[in-house]
Length: 346
Image (cartoon, rainbow, N blue to C red; front, top):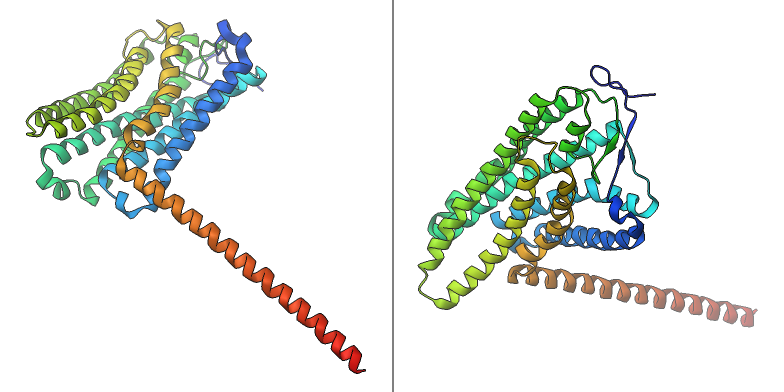
């Protein structure tokens, strides 16, 4: 049964092209991307887990980082499993509803992620440039409102865009020149007049990305100015080391997404979009846990504490098991001895 969406649409499923030029290396690419996928999920899951488990990490910075890691996990889970399936079994088809669900999840979580980056930059600005007022400004209520604002701003913008795209006519071809249901590729496949939708996609994605980029740039510019005023050379070096690693990660994220989305004609450069999207979907989620938290001393301490607690739990369980086995063995032997004595008496 074909999917009827809009005037003249009769598309039952789409075909994801993937990477046809290197498709013969499917098994190798499957293994590489599987390892990257598992490492990304593990790294981001560790951040979420230790932030929830360790009370020392219940601060605004780690709250934002744990939510950011959660969004990273959701984003890569929306895209990479299908890519792995393409590499492993060559199954490239995706149903019409599944395609739009994938596009929505990827765009919604991605938009929320970029808005949250701006919030994280503001948090670091207040912590470094206004340390005496940090706890007053970044209280629990403010953090909750900022996170809620990221989700509530992204949801209507992305929902509205996807609704408009879903109302376009899709009457063939049905091959998406990408490894997931990218919004620009879907617009390119439509046989309707797409000028309004292209402009809407350009305006909305530009608004989200450029707003986040401007806030982040202003925040880090002020942070750098403040760091330059530090009296100690050692403090300057440590601060610049942290900032430089953050800026590398941000450059990859903003660079790849600006290249893909901030252009008025969405049908241009679809081929090169795949490589840029791969950076944003595979490389940055793999690097972000290392750059943002796993090189942090507080995180190392929390990880060690969690590992020690797990080891203690294992030792306690082993001890309890040993005591229980000894008790049951003793009762069994005592029962046998008692039975033998009774038999002797009889």
